[in-house]
Length: 79
Length: 156
Image (cartoon, rainbow over all chains, first blue to last red; front, side, top):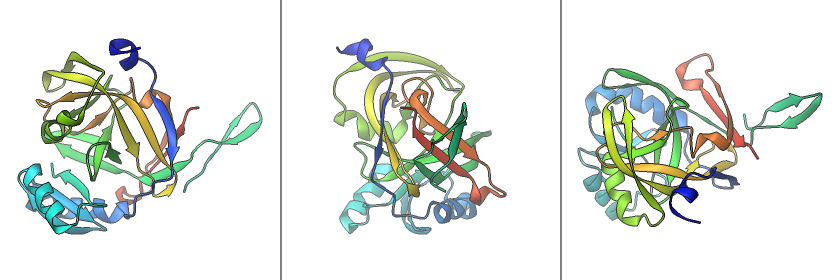
């Protein structure tokens, strides 16, 4: 089976033991408190702390990789 | 926060296997997009957020995220044009793993169909067909925006 037939079938759902390390609430609070200052930028957060930001996602990801901070980072565009 | 009990015809059963706080009231281009949940998209080495939208027929990933993901995606794929509030967008429908991340309990891995559309400038959208249709979920708005919870489980 392939093509449309596969893409139109019901999604497969299963539990995963993965649990995010972060406290989602502190990241959301950071986004709310800093929205105006970072509007339009991509930001990387962990535990409510800004790791880095950039206007382009590729540049931000490049620096996160170089600095070893990618794992567990929460990356979003502020809009 | 992980669990909940569903009572159906007198039989109690657990229905929620995971839960996480969700963001509410995100402003985007003058529109309030109300519910954003945290997720991990296979192929991207970081956690991000997506709008939970039962009114959307399909899930969509656009812009920079789509450009980074596109080279990693394989078959099957089908070209599709989708009519959205931002106009018509072209993309390719792919099968993709997206994990809804839990703060309590277990996360949920969904292998569904997602439109990859680089021209889509809105947020990642998790729509009904091919994604939400097999998830049992509930939203608890809490008493303030910092305490809104998303409960979820496989519908079986």
